[in-house]
Every structure is written in structure tokens, then in C-alpha cells.
Length: 141
Length: 113
Image (tube, rainbow over all chains, first blue to last red; front, top):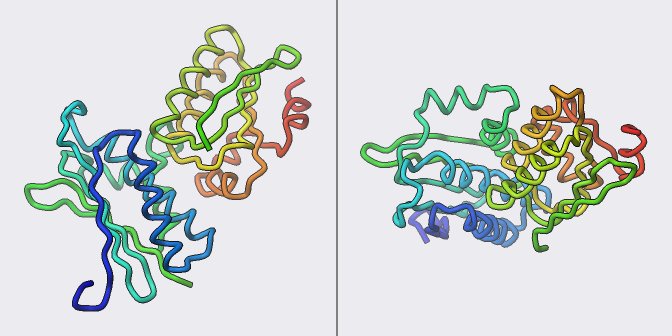
């Protein structure tokens, strides 16, 4: 538990397609524990899946490396759930991120639009000397 | 629900039945099956998503990719969806305007034949 009373659940997964389902299971479990309605749980599950899939597809140049990871940190606040999804890779630049969000439907490029549509807040930043950090926030209604 | 992919043909129209979660891990299998069908000259394809309990942009991307492959042959990808949570993803991405969507296989078949 943090000083402000919020609780945290953290998880590190290999950045491989077959592990994204585990991220979905964990965030859905946390959301249900917080008594989110089932539709909101589905939104959180899908948004997290999109964030993890982006990492699997774009974050790491050498996809064969065993230390490629997805880090997920869920922060359970009084009336909202904040999910931070991060990596240690090269990923998308901020410009590219916005460009991807604005694209027409293609085989790629839909994921970030879905995240923005489903979550109440979406923050994106690149840490100095590290990968990208995407923070997804859903409010309890 | 375990991921499962089945293909059947009705009146020469292939129906791709997808079951389970269609995501970054499983969607490539759907892509591969669609590419095979197009290579066999099948340009009107029904994709039945009634038993899909999770779909993300990787799955949508495969469907959009399939559409791009059949369009030059004046073909179509027709979808069967009967779950609101799956339909919602098509609505928020604007893809309800791109794909004909029906709630039964019979209606989807009638739109093609």
C-alpha cells in the first residue's frame, strides 16, 4: 500500500504474443475486485491488451531477446484504476504515437485509437534512457 | 474458451468460424487461413465471430487485411456477430461502415448468394 492509501499490483511478462492473455486476466481480476461493471472490465481488458500488443509488435528491435519484457503496474485508487504498461525497448516516438492514433483503419494502427476510446485518461511518455510508459486510467462510475 | 478455427463451405462460399480469443497470438492463424482461401480464388468469405469472446486490433487488422486482398477481385468479407461487446469494437473503430455485419450465418449467406 502506498502513502496515499492506494494499492498496487505489479507484473512482469516476457514480451511475447502468448503472454498477453495473462496481462488481460490480471487486470480483469483487479477490476472485478474493485467492483467495476462488467462492461468496464471488458474495456480495461481490451485497452490493456492493446497496450501489451503494441509492445510485442513495436517495442523491441530484436524480438528474439529473452530479456524483452512487458511491465504492468495496476494502482488501485479510491475511485479509479490506473494501469501503467511499460517496456524497455525503442518503441514508437511521441510523434509516431500521435500519427498512429490518427490513421485510417489499416492492418495496424487501430490499437491506440481503441485505447483512447475506452479509457477515461491516457498518458504517454518516454523515460530518459528507458522505454515507453503508457498510463491508462478508468474511473469507477 | 480455447482458440479454434474451422472452415466449411456452403454453396461454394467459405465460412471461417473462429472460436475463443482473437488477439496478437491467435490472429496470425486467421490471417494465414484467409490468405489460403484468397489464393484458392475464394473472394467472398464469411467470417463467423459468434463464438469469439475477445477481439482486439490484431484481429481487426487481419479482417481489414483480408478485405484488402479480396477487394481487387470485387470480393467481400462478410461478418457474423451476435455479441454486443464484439460489435462495440467495430463501432468505436468505424469498421461497421467497412464490413457488412449480420447476426446470423443465414443472413450473411443471403447477402452474398
